[in-house]
Length: 309
Image (cartoon, rainbow, N blue to C red):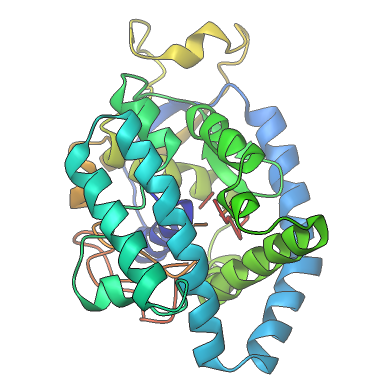
């Protein structure tokens, strides 16, 4: 599942349900580190990425921005294809293969999104989704440097795909690779501008709200739980093998955040935006089930929030 798509859904859900009153304890054993990294990411975003993204939007025509986003989304379909093969989901892997083949062949190398026009399902699964399908459904919140909101499970998957990016097979020159990576990050951040601008003035503690909303949606996607503080017998929590013993500082989160729906009930289509973190896809009205609808040119977490994975 694209992290960009997830971030957009997280922010949209927050904006529509910021008045939740019911609460339950939530274990955040890495909160000390997470808050520090959140602040670092926030300053980088506020003073570097956001101004660059605004400049990119101002000088780049909309059709060109759409073509750039389509190109990187086509590369994400390649990652999704590999992830679905690992989870032995042949149906979704076949769909990903068809999308890449059509968009690459008839879409001018991915600049045109022919697959979406033909209503071919858009999966955008990641290694984090694959790990969840293997049983690692529960994972603690983790703020990835630069890339933003994530989990321990998803961060491992993102690190692997970042270490061996698909575009390395296309672009051989290091200078071109770094330029493409930078363009991906800026394009992803530009898609999120409208959503994050609304968030900046909406929350008293943006870290807590971002964490709670992100974890609610991500756990709905993979079928995980939210680690209530009194739950000491979670056999599926692989994170407990590495989580610090003394890290049971608790904060509150809406009780309704308990996951009770399958992932595809929350986010069905893709959004335009990585954490090179996300992963940009066009936003759909079905993006967040029973909550709100995003504009077609608006956008996903891993970013902060310009996740391009």
